[in-house]
Structure formats: structure tokens, C-alpha cells
Figure 1 (cartoon, rainbow, N blue to C red):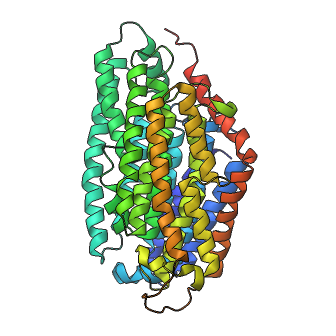
Figure 2: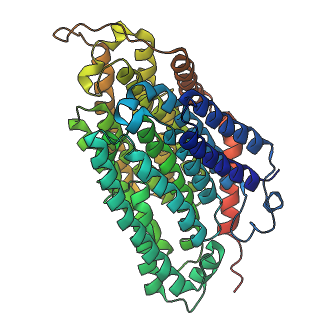
Figure 3: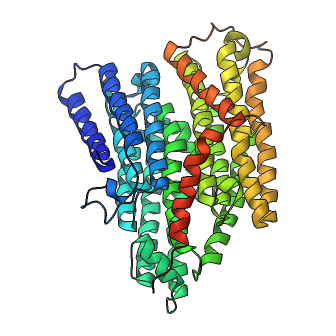
Length: 499
């Protein structure tokens, strides 16, 4: 079985669930959820059994898809986050149905499958046309998902903002693609890489196109100065969608950015210095514009939005340090590792908010007060999540930030290093505000019943918490896969130009 078959199967399952929900209204959301999660789970199992390499792809797919280790990592990542989001939809459904038409969440259980397929196609794209088509599949699905709880005024506002800014960013991206094509005569990453290193390529036109291309992708990953949509959209979107945007959308964006940077900033590229400098500058600003406003947030969900911006900055800093790095990982390997660490701790944070909402509480910092007394297990899980997001040693979040810092040191990026350390220090303040609130006295807060946590939420929460601690202490299981991902992109960047 090929990876393309798995992706096509997921797309067909999404269509089937849409039709089933529309024409068989008697089918329960639990049934739809089980079918959707079973499909993604089966796809994940099948993906593990598929061998990488071009031979694993059908002949008609090979011209626009590749299946190296980097693609396999991001495809697997897309399936894992989609599976968690689908479960989170079922967990949040009891209160979400109050804000949806006819009290249904059927589309919330099918549209994530289309997002997943789009992310998987972006991960293995060979050219910018494939990137654009896959990106639009992801983006249009998110337009619907963000505004799906349409009885909520905040959700409608978030949906409109995301739609307008998303459309503008798509236009910027296409404009950049056109200029890059005009400068290089190719839409394939390998062709762009060769042309960028060839004599006679118009450097000014290529640099102009690269600027617009990176700006369009910068919106997708919430890089400054294109991050202004994140806090409002996260606050208005439902919990599963906010988690999906925070982790899935970011991973898909960096999967594409890894390919684009490898093409534009390969060895000998006429614009290598400018592209890498732009990434370092954007990353330095992004870590601060994500961290500093988070200090003043009282909404934990909005705080996680600013946190997402800050983490995007760390990823940009890593991506801007192309070349060999520590532990056998290059910049793309560090980005992949950081995303692998980012997934469990971020989903844990949104899971905690979902549990509180299901118990009739809000998303404000005050709603966390006294949680350590009312639900010690939930408080412990949340503590691990936010401590890891802050980068506390012995958690997986610490390793991710440490790798970025070491990469900056190796590259001599001292100014960017200062920005990163400052952002990390500020992060400790606003993350630990949530932890301190949970274990502070709840005097003056209206007496509340103990927080009820479903069995499924307990299992998933404990599992993610164990991953946060275990991978923080013993990350070795991730290393072989990430080294292969590094080597896959390194071989593309260092290949002879062929001109």
C-alpha cells in the first residue's frame, strides 16, 4: 500500500462522513467520531508500515510528491494531531453544541480529515503549485472550522478575521510564487535551488519573490509582523480548533518553510544570506511580540495564543541557522524535534481548558484558582504542561528550547540568542502565573463543585503528561527519526547544482 492510497482513503472518509451527517441525521456524533478516529488511527498504523522513498509512490504522483524521511515525519505528525483533535471534539461536544446550528458537530468530525490530507500533501510537496493547492485545502477547511460555533459572536468575529487575513496572505503568497518563477523559470524546489545558485539568475527579482513568498508563509506560522490574528482567532474559535491551529497548522507551515528555505538558501544561492538573515530577524522579533503581551493576559486561552507566537519565533530562529548542528541534527531536524516537543504540552494546555469548560467554568485565570484542591490530578497535569511550555529542565519543552539556543550559539547569532533568552525568561513569568493560580488560596472565589474529569480525558491527559516528562528525561527514541529527516533535506541542499 502506498502513502497516496492512505491519503486518498482519508479524503474519501471525510466525504463519506459529511454525506452521512447530512443525509442520515439519526447517526449520533459518537458514531461519527468513532468512524473518524478509527480511520485516522488506521492510517497512522499503515503509515508506519510503509517504506519511504519514491518507490512507495504511484507513478502519476511522483512528479509532484516526494517521500523522504522529512515528509514521513510531518505526515505522521499530521495524523497524530488530527487524532487528538478529533477526540477533543468529542470531549468538548457537550458544551459546543449550544453554539452550533441544530446542536450538531458533524462537520467538526469530518473537516479535520481534509485538513490532515492537506497537511500530508504539503509535507511531501515537490513544487510550489502542490504547496498552494494543499495549503488552500487546509486553509479553506479552517475557515469553516474557526467560525463553526456560529451562535457565538466571538467565533463569528474570529472567522471573519481569519478569512480576510487568510485571503490577503494567500494573495501575497501567490505573488511571491509568480516572482520566484519569473526569476528561476521553475516551480519545483530542486529547480529553484539550482537556478538560485546559477550564474545569470536575476538576484533582485529572486530576492523580491522570496520576500513575498516568506511573508505569505509567515502568516500561516504566525511570524511577526503577521501574527496579529492569532490571539483573537484562538479566543473565538472552539477549543479543538484552537489546538489544531496552534499545533497542526504551525507544523504544516514549517514543513513547507523547510523546503522553501532549502531551495532559496542552499549552498551557493545568490540570496542565501538575505533569506537566512530575514528568518533570524523575524524569529527575534516574533519571540518578543509573543512573550511580552502574554504578561498582561488574564484569559488563559488568549495566553496560549501569544505562547504559540513565541514558539513560532523559536522555530524561525532554528530554521535560520542552516548547516550542521548538535546531536546530528541540522536546522530542519531541530525544527522537527521542537514541534515533536510542542505537541504534547500544547494539547495538554487546551485539554485542561476543555475540561474546565465542560464543568461550566470559563477560560480566565481566576477559573484556575484553587484547582489544586478541587482536582489535584488535573492540576498536576496542567502544571507539567505549562512548566514544559516555559522550558523547565527535565521536561521535553526544555530540550526543544535548549537545542535552539545551542544552534544559535554554534552559528554565532548572539543578538538573536539574547532575544531568545529574554523571551524564555519572560515565558517563565506568564506560564507560572497559571500554575501559581491553581495552588493559591481560593478565598473570595465562589465555592465550586469538584471538577469532574472523564475517563477518556484522564487517560489522554496522563499519557501526554508522561510523554512530556519521559521524552524530557530520555529523548533518545526520537533521535533516529529526526536524524533521518535532517539527512533527507541535507542531501537535497548539498546536491550538485547540475547547471
